[in-house]
Amino acid sequence: MRRGRGADGASRLTPSRMRARDTLRVAFSGLRTRPLRAVLSALGIAVGIAAMVAVVGISASSQEQVNQQLRELGTGLLTVSPGTSFRGGEAKLPENSVDMVARIDDVDAVSAVGVLGDANVYRNEAIDPGQTNALAVHAADTGLLDTVSGTVADGRWLDDALAEYPAVVLGSDAAELLGISHTDGSINVWLGDQWFTVVGILDPVPLAPELDMSAMVGWPVAAELLGFDGSPTTVYELSGENKVDDVRGLLPATVNPSNPEEVAVSRPSDALAAQAAVDETLTTLLLALGGVALLIGGIGVANTMVIAVLERRSEVGLRRALGATRPHIRRQFLGESVLLAGFGGIGGAALGGVVTAVFATSRDWQFALPLWVLAGAAGATVVVGALAGVYPAARAACMPPTAALAIA
Image 1: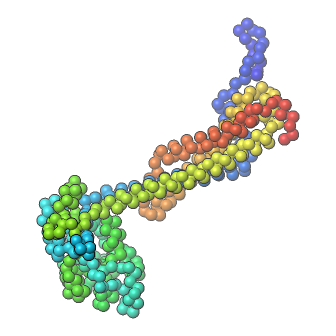
Image 2: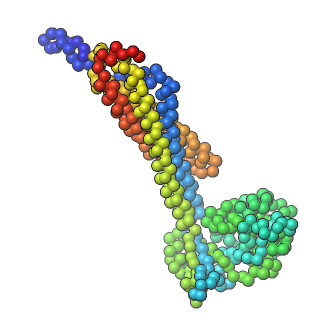
Image 3: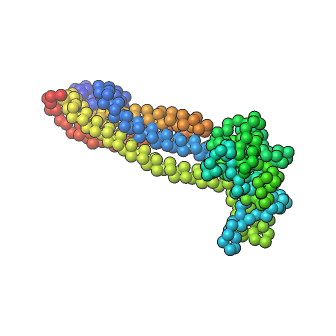
């Protein structure tokens, strides 16, 4: 209460007022008197917010990377592989599969590879034959790289001339496992009991990841030296994105007119889209874990505020004696709780953003942190701070002016 004068000039008591600016100033001063405790309590909130921001940010960056790959590579690639025969055995694609697919009007490019099951690749002839590192050897069509949107990291790709000679191009993972990082014409590998010269190393091929673990040789030399029968095991077909469904329906009967049911057609871009869906599911799980950390931080803030109320009984009683009302006391401690959680939320959001940026940069991803994440973090801290401060604020507001006589 404060003393003022009415319209008739008489002195009378009027209720005291506490402006929002005053509430903020008093709440901040309450935190400033115990900085270490405030920092430790805010740290619990910061950990939960940082976890949530980092999880969403990393997931968003990962999905943006996948979307960027799909935009760059396109979604018009289809793969044709042998399915299961009527008798339950493994079917085979006809030797002229590539030529038959190329006759479809909407096909822009077609190529193929054939697995050489009896051939393995080693760094040298002294390696134990059982140590294959799960590397496959493929006979590759010279048009393969353009069809699957692949690129050469070092050296060159097979052309019509090299395809006639014992030359090999390694996938990115195959080159790493074999300990080969460059090609200068002097590096050979032991392939199918023959020496083959490494002429190229590929970058990772997102739409055909099986090529990353492969050693690829020319179609003619595979038939001449490695016993290749000319039957492709995978045919890669590229068409316009708006023509994919039409071409997909024609491929089985085109590749194997007599037994179209023995032909399996798939779309590699679907695997990338599925990867994004899996990332989204994992993000939900990790967000739940971040929410648990945020809840624990909120409990820490509530505990800090309860202790603060008990320690500041004399302060609360003195303010009550000087005219502060119960709503004033309630707003003061509620403001302290919201400020405490808010500082933790700001620090956690900044930390989560830094973690996301560092992780995305280390993976060469595009940094993507949605604004709604930061807005959600701010909203979450306000809610947590308000909930954590409800009971301590109500308890402080119930203290009488005589609490000023309590020993601090």
